[in-house]
Length: 367
Image (cartoon, rainbow, N blue to C red; front, side):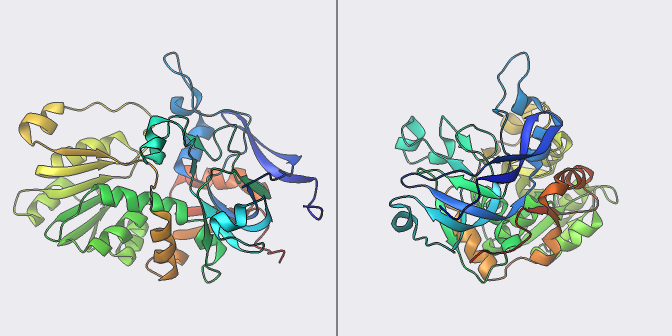
């Protein structure tokens, strides 16, 4: 710790659209804690929605917001281990100089869900970059608390790819919630960073037909490289009609919603077959309403939510190590930390990028 600087540059979230590059103190580690020098950190759609002031993060007349500003954002990250608190090395199998990632949630370990082993639904719900207990990684250094769930990353995985472990792990969990069978037709709505990970994970389940939907033909090309049999653009074709034609009029067996757009919910309910499984993953900008009769009396659907990435980080790391995704097509932009506003604008625009990474240390390892 003696060789570390006293201060560091960091993005500080203070209010909606009030994010600033500031000089902050470098965290110090205690027992069981890990300090990393951040090599890459992704900008997530939830980061964008927080920046834009979505009620889920900032509250409204009916509820308190989730974001505890001022806070350093960033929950998709990888870094080089530079300090280990007592016991942390043995606990996580980490050594100084290793690359490490951490699950986005640091569970409390004491609530009903944690005690039942359902840690991803922790009642306290400290997620990096949103809560006071878990400052995020849009900074030169980031502290992983004693209760964090950390993993070593093989050096064979480039750091800009390793920061994709978090969204990929979330995608894997959503696919697992779909309970895909070999005979199924699977539709994944949205070919952004999460949807592309879902396509790659669903391909490993080997369904009979795997279809990706997106409004961007370029992203559909990447989806095919991830393993989709077919890419359909709702601007070009009636995707509901096309899926029905491909399935003898029945519709898809599994529909996974990863667009974050309310229209994709209605689209999925119309497209899915009777007794199908609908997986809702997205964080919506506004409440979504629909005809629940379709879910119950008309189709008797299985409706599954998908939240975070329980037990999926090791799988995600293995998928990247095995080269199962075209990562050079997914990670489209790498920017210095000071250009975080440009990165946010790229994510908001959505037409020029897929995954945008910030590089706080410009990719330089110090060991």
